[in-house]
Image (cartoon, rainbow, N blue to C red):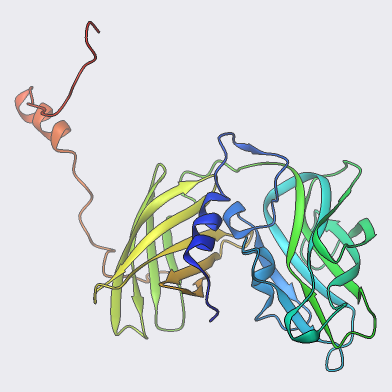
Length: 306
């Protein structure tokens, strides 16, 4: 678990907001945009930082223990027609380590799957600090991208650093009204159940091997669920979740200044949670109209002369 500032959490949530259903000309490779990290060839525990939208977080490994190259595969929410790909350089590092930011990078795309069908999109020398974006020729939309880091700025550097993966282009958010409805296995003993009604999401979850429980509420925005959770001990936090091409729930849960991976595959048939048998929410206005034909509503105001 790695600490993360509250301002970064806000930035991550806002990174998912855009008025149109077609996403264009912004970094698509963030969890808030529905991207999932599929694999990392080295130090996978650090690799989620490459798509967390946090400019202060990044991935690193020791070159003596793990000589390059290193590869990272990510999956977009939907096939995208890309206009540019790149990385965000890590810059100079504290402690006297210089020249460690990634330099030689190859980016490949696939419309087939995370392990096959890749063709090269770009090959470039990344800048030491800040974003390096390289235009790509529009072609067949791709859903999986593989980034391969071949060398650092200084090939003798004892560590290689990388801040973020980047891609710009256009994808259309899939229309799935029940995208998040279901029961998912968070672990062998813990479950989360979500119910989506339009953009609204409610649900509950178990924690600590079924010893504690909690509820979630939130909304789906452009195919990504932005949630608030509350435990039965009164602890609160937020979460960002998406679903990948296998139907697996993937994301992170935030508590105070820490975060943890949250999600899992669909639970076995018949799995149930504390909210599985909860009665459906009622509409008191509709019920009053159905039973009596009229209803009183308070607190409704009209503009002057409207």
